[in-house]
Image 1: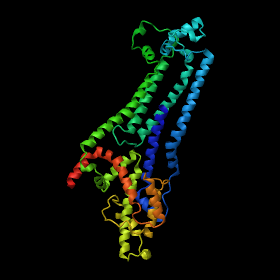
Image 2: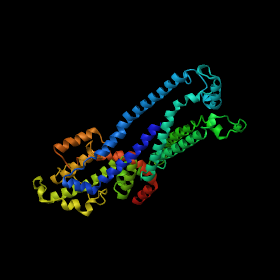
Image 3: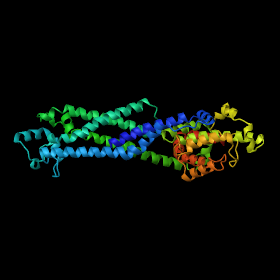
Image 4: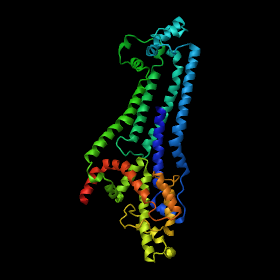
Length: 437
């Protein structure tokens, strides 16, 4: 459980940084400049290797390997204890809790009668003294886990990782790290404080109080039960709270089921508002799907370039042979070409219009950034769409070559980040809709 939690937390941290990197490197101005100069945006090897590490090697190789190593060491410790002391913890049914909790009296009993055959030892006699080496592995792992949780807490506290929801994945990982640190500190505090007590007799009259440190130590199975709290808390934040959120979201969706703002066509209107697109981008970063909103922004920019180029091309004659009669320099670097790029109000174009040579660098850059599976921000579109784009791009390309991919990306955003956006801004969007009416 601890290993899975640690990798989950670092996965959140690394993927958040990866999405921030995508937003930075795929800035629209850089996209225009790199495309014009013919320097396509090259995938960042470091971040791509981190992505593969997080999603493949950690999940399929590192975690099982660590689990196997721990299991082998634990079995070796048990075998070693058996060879040295006999069946102190074997297959004979015994009251193991009593054997652990009666360590004070058990040590005295074993020393007094020089017990060597533990198979016949009464349940009330503790064998924990000789069993203790078998618990050291978990104690060392707990110390390591506490240190890692401290690192995780510092990273969360010092970075701008945010949650799309109030009790989202950051709250889950951050709060679980804090709880794990506190539980670990309490456990080792009790263990150190009780170190001398278990070697000597305890005042039986004073020890009758259920709330003495010694009684708490024994009744929590030498502090082991404290760690059950971590498991319960992780179940609460990872399972129960998300389940409650799903139920509440479903009820909210049913309450607004017939409201136009829940329809796909209205989502297209939201995408036309630059300030709302920025809010969607913030949510997409938190949901590790920022490539979709970046696809939309850069496609909108490409849309503007297509309209201006095809319009100018028609003005100079409309023949593919006279493409060299104009330059795109003024278009590329004009103030209006990169501002408010998510607003595609300049008009429409014929998607079957042939792809002009002036636009080829920008289409190539867009393809190797968002469509190619090895691109730095490849979107999750269907294989058939990718195949069709590849074919058309190498045979008879048109300016509408990416339109089908756009529809798929918008649908993905509609079902992924738009519900979160609505839950946070439903009132604001409702007021906007009423004003439009």
